[in-house]
Image (cartoon, rainbow, N blue to C red; front, side):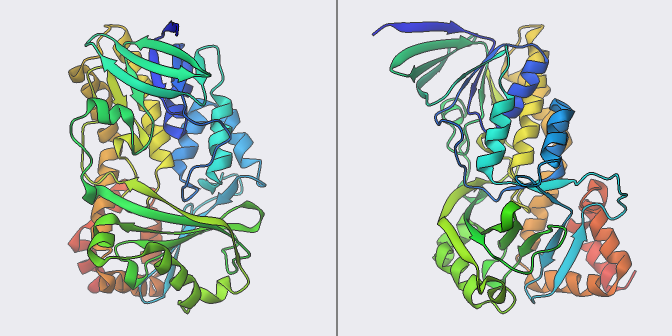
Amino acid sequence: METIQLNTSVIIIGAGPAGAGTSFFLTKYGIPHIVIEKDTFPRDKVCGDACSGKTALVINRANPEWLTEILADAKQFLPSWGITFVAPNGKALEIPFSPNRTPETKAPGFTVPRLVLDNFLFGKMQSEYCNIFQNASVSQIDNTGSMVTALMMHDGVNYEIKAPIIVGADGDKSIVRKKFLSESIAPKTYAIGLRGYYQGVTGLHKENYIELHFLPEMLPGYLWIFPLPNGMANVGVGILSERVRKKKINLREQMLYAIKNNPDIAPRFANATLTGKIQGWGLPLGMTRQPISGDNFILTGDAAALIDPFSGEGIGNALYSGMLAAAAIKEAQTPNNFSAGFLKTAYDDVFYKRIGEELQISAALQRLCKYSWLFNFVVNKAQKSASLRNTISCMFTDMDLREQLSKPSFYLKILMNR
């Protein structure tokens, strides 16, 4: 069988948010690239469906009109203005994302089914610089030191695609990571998530706050309820895989038990119905700094293990890493230097300088969550103190303040009412 030879500047494996983010900015820089996607859009992706302000930031930088389009379409993208934490003792703490907002303030985040979001982003990838192959399979990737070669099958035709760099945007089972990065993700950095779509959940916040319920039996994980458009809600659980193994937890049973029996949650599901199946997926958490590039390759999104350890949100970091990957590739083109050393400076160091501290703080908060008494203590104090509630609210937009949450001195000050 004849093999078609293709040459390009960048090969991207995967067309989800990480691949789309990379493609958007490569197009802005006028860099030709080929995207290889194993599925055909629209396609679903098991996820919590919550998008942070980081998601909005990257989309706005790619094209402000796209963000305007999203915020104007409440039938598919539901604006969210805050988050509700429910402590193990059942007490709730509502935290607005924009406590000092004006009528002109845009919603800092939104919720949307991944089926809708990914298809929206995929549609925006189309450009003269982007050549996309859907329903395509990669059988082999080789790195000669100056060129990467990917062997692809598409519509019964064999392709040999060459480029000086390849971007792994192909999720937690990334073939790019497995091929080029000897260090595997340690099991302890994984969490397991389950999610189901429910119709008719009551008691949702009027401003579509996302909810995190830190139930005692799930610590340091939680059950979430995220409102979606059209009266739907994404309901799920996320727990460290290490705890699941040690405690031999059946996540599905635990999730359904909470929905049926928890005194604060069960009444809200009295007339709710499950739409479709409860599905699960792995969550590669960004617990520690790991290499995310090397000779002639860059990893983005879940392939780089960049999910926030505390919130579990990965879409924003996937898009953000794609944006930085494109900038690093642009920087590497002029000297034609795609070596591990150059890419570490241009990509790894830049990413961790901007997001590394955030991931470290989230990892610390995740570890603190296993102490139910500490969580109850903070929520109890915050319910009585408007200034403390405001401080915690600001911590979600100010990383310097958020860092205080991971320090013992913060809790000592609360104890001393200071």
